[in-house]
Length: 102
Image 1 (tube, rainbow, N blue to C red):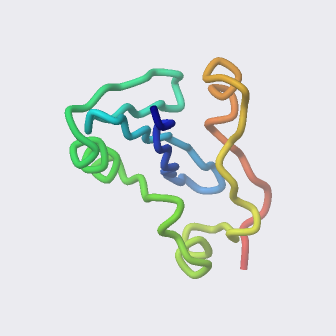
Image 2: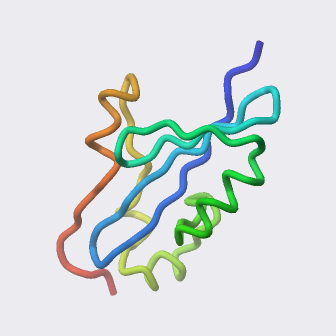
Image 3: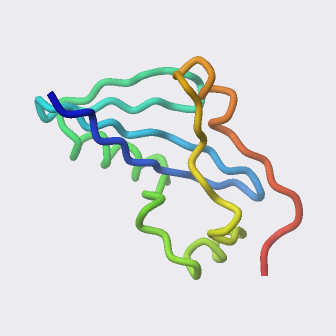
């Protein structure tokens, strides 16, 4: 059995980054772990992606430096949060940064 595929998404408001983790399941379904610590289930990864885009999230892997700078960050500043489990991950899903990049 293979491990689920995780994709990181982010939304920005000023110098605040809000992360969401999209987990693609083997059966073709998807789960989104959000900044409130909720795990939301979707019938497909397409539905989960559309929901994230409707909420103005963008996929982290799709950002280039110019996109990041337009959002007020350098890619060097941004990295998806890491933790051993979802309980430890939850408080890291919102990040606050200091002065604006550029």
